[in-house]
Length: 236
Image 1 (cartoon, rainbow, N blue to C red):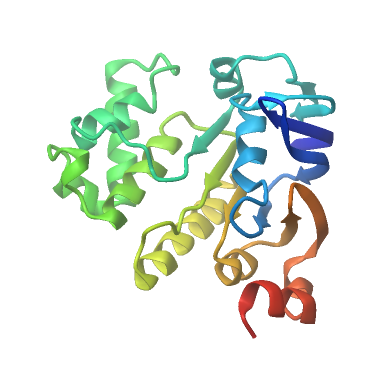
Image 2: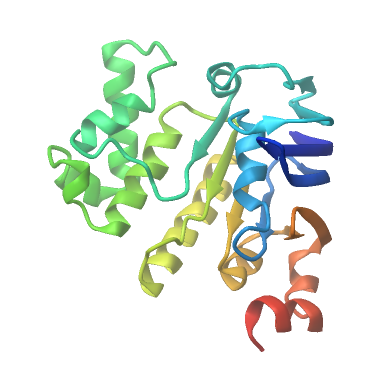
């Protein structure tokens, strides 16, 4: 589904990602964990071509997307749920969802049906459909972000720090929602997350980033019991 081959990424002249290789296969949830500044969000932005790509190959569904602009990458089927949520704060829940479908060219009936599908998945959003996004709770805003990302019927979801700023009970709820989307809609998900425990318990495979380098990778169930991972990222 998605493959990065020996990818190098820069901010100006400063290299932020070194020779990174990873893959996300059909139906998988794959996690990237690491400390702040390790290169997690940089990896996501490189996939969307919003960070300066150096050498390497970014491949999606068998197609090299190295030179594609961000809008074309979205149209190919990658939906990015950004760190910090980044909603349109003065727009209503409904309007934010409509923005998620801007490239789909739905008919009015198709758009209404898609929004109703999101409201079935997230009943709280239906209750707040006319409310401005900035007035929602953090958990509700995260629901809007996920629903907005699904409006384009993506082939792949990129989730950047979905737990950021949420209370623990809402973190668990958010990851449950992502697991349900993966199971029911068969959409593969790449999650970047500082909460290593949630990332490892939700994903099937995981990559560990340290200072822009993939320092370890493997089965999430095996990594979560690794002494090195537990000491460095789980605090035990």
